Amino acid sequence: MNGRESVHNAQLDYQRQAYERHFPKRTAVVRSQLAHPLFSSFNDRVAGLILDAAGGAGAGAGPGGTVRVFEPGCGEGFIATALERVAAQRGVNLSYTGADLSAAGIELAGSAVEGGLRVGDAAEVAASLPAGSQHVVVAKNLLHHLPDPTSFLREVRRILAPGGTVIAFEPRLGCPQFMLFNVLEFRRERHYFEGQRRNAAAFRNAGYRVLSCNLFSWLPYELLFVIRLDWFRRLFSTGDERTIARWTKLDDRLTKAVPWLACYAVWVGAPEPEA
Image (tube, rainbow, N blue to C red):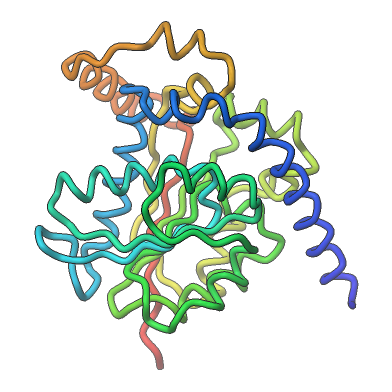
C-alpha cells in the first residue's frame, strides 16, 4: 500500500467511525425532522433541482417518464424522501439508489426510503452499478469528504446514461454555519478549506463540462432543523403554505442580495463527448 492509499483509507476509516457514532444519536428525531413542513420545503427545493438536472437524460423528467437517481452519501434519507415526494407531485417515476459509508445511516434511511440502499464507499458502490444506468448522480456534501473526487467523478461518468448529469451541492467557505462546523470538525472536513477550485478541477480532470454553477439558499435551514435540539422545530413549526412560500422567497432574495454568505454552490456537470 502506497502513501496515497494509506491516507485515503485512514480518511475513510475516520469518517466511517465518526458517522457510526453520529447516526444512532439521531434515531429519535429523524421522523420529526422528516415531517417538519418548513424543513421539508427546503429538501423539496433540493429535490426539484435534482429532477431538473435529469431533464436532458433519455427518459426525461416529464410526467410519465422514469428517472434513475444514484445518491452516494445519502445519510438518513432526507433527500431521498423529498425526491420520492416531488417526483410523485410531478408524475415522474423514480428509480432511486442510495449509498452511505455508514451502516447506521443506511439503517435510518431504510425506515423512510422506498428505493434500494447500499452500504459502502461512494466510488466502490458506483463501480458496482451497470454502465449507463443512471440519469442523474447526486453528490450533496460529498466531494469535500473525498480524498480523490476526480476518481469518483470518472467512475460516475461510466454509469451515466446518455444525456445524464452530476449535480453536486457543496458548502461554501463564506457560509457561517458551515464554517463553524468545519472549524470544530477540521479533521473530518480537511478538504473543505481547499475551496471551490478543487471541485472545478475535479470536474475538469474527470472529463466533464460544467453546465452551471449557481448559489443556493441563504437561511440556515440545516443548522436549525438537523440538530437534535427540537426547540427550533417548535419555533418554526408552521405548516401554512403561504408562510412557507414567504420564507422561500426571502431565502432566494437573500441569496441574490448577499451572495458571499450563501450556503451552497450547486454544480451541474455533464460528460464531455468522447473524442
